[in-house]
Image 1: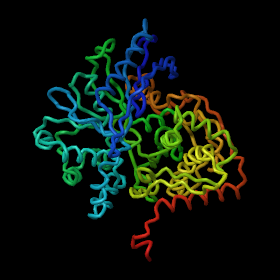
Image 2: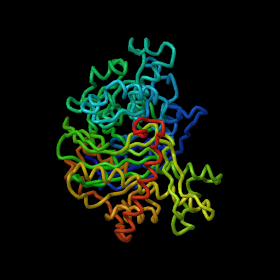
Image 3: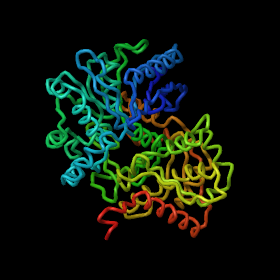
Amino acid sequence: MKCDELLLAIDQGTTNTKAILVPRDGRPVFVTSSAVSLSQLNNGFLEQDPLLLWESVVRVVADCVKRAKPKSIAAVGIANQRESIVAWERHSGKPVAPAIIWQCRRSEPFCTRLAQSGHAQMLREKTGLAIDPLFSASKMRWLLENITGLRERAEAGDICFGTVDSWLIWKLTGGRVHACDSSNASRTQLLNLRTCDWDDDILRLFGIPRVALPEIRNSSGHFGECVEIAGLTGVPILSAIGDSHAAMAAHGSYAPGTVKATYGTGSSVMTLLPEFRLAESGIATTIAWQIRDKPHFSLEGNISMTGSAVQWVGEFLGLSDPATAAAKLAEAVQDSAGIHFVPAMVGLGAPYWDTEARGVLMGLGRSSRAAHMARAAMESIAFQIRDVFDAMEAEAGCSLPVLYADGGGTRNRWLMQFQSDILGRPVLRSQQEELSALGAAWMAGLSLGWWNSLANLESLRGDTEEFLPRLPIRQREQRYADWKDAVARTRYRPNSKEQAS
């Protein structure tokens, strides 16, 4: 085994694609990134061009290959934005439509009908997931129903469906491998968690041909060899894993009850389980990762708008650099002056799963200013994380002592302190920013034999910065009660039977 080898990990996200180089000590020695564009159409659809996603991967890989010399690249790992769906021609590799992004709500009418048809319990028992447009299955169905001839072509085996990991694997291997990993498969709402295979009953329910779906493989395992990208010919792809799961892995703590939150465009809160069990309280059961054919399960809560809520406020206020400027503006005031902003513009995710909820800005007064609105948007991130954290604590039946934090939003020290204050728990911020890519690299290293087990990976754990709660309990609980009241207003339906009663 060569000591001068490096792992190359790709993290294809919603707003950028990153790549890192990792030697045998498990710490990144090089990081590069390339921005990717997101199209929001007038009807609210959110899309990306799959070929532009691929081009961003080519750019970051080229940077890594150039930097790696004279060392060699031993393996490639992939982390990716989850639930987004790509469809392409099997014979040509040409996309048949833009990628439907995880935040897109175009399949909401179908999901509403599905929920009313009485299938919610069956889907939760088999897949661990609530019915929601977030998940990939309804997006696939939308494509099949809205692109002329696509269903017939899919049933004939001419069309490939896949999450972003499978699209990248297809491209890297020159169309030789159509596969995804178990963590991504578990986010489609087509995977039976007990069998770790596509479920025929659910495929029929959504009308999705099995022949169009990728093969499901271990998160740490062989996905073929690279053939069509400069500098990687013959290099094996040895991991694929959803970005949130990869970040969980890279925190380096694998004991049940470990909780992490990823602060990105949206947010994922995840805690590891000792064994499979279905969750209640609006929390999903999902596969954290699968190693040597053994699935490791977790509870997860997904929040659609956290970082994107700050972005939205910045755009609403007409700021030139919306997200960055709004975050800076928020620190110009001591508090939100009683304003609460619930960013339910695309409905509410965990633990509410309310597709009909819509955003609310409340508490405005004569003295309210733009900075207070920006502050309320930042605070909404921490409040939404607590919503999920509390639901997970109820599921666990015990106190969860600490929150691990990662993602771009953690660079904001004020946000991390406010998160600790609202939770009443220590928050441990990872000092390593590229945790999703790092988790993919570690999974590739496991497959390569650089490390033998998750226990070995614990020794690679990076440094953290601790934020301790400072807010008095009475103030914390009053602030949170006010937030819960604001959430209730997003869900108020004056004409519903529930409200009428």
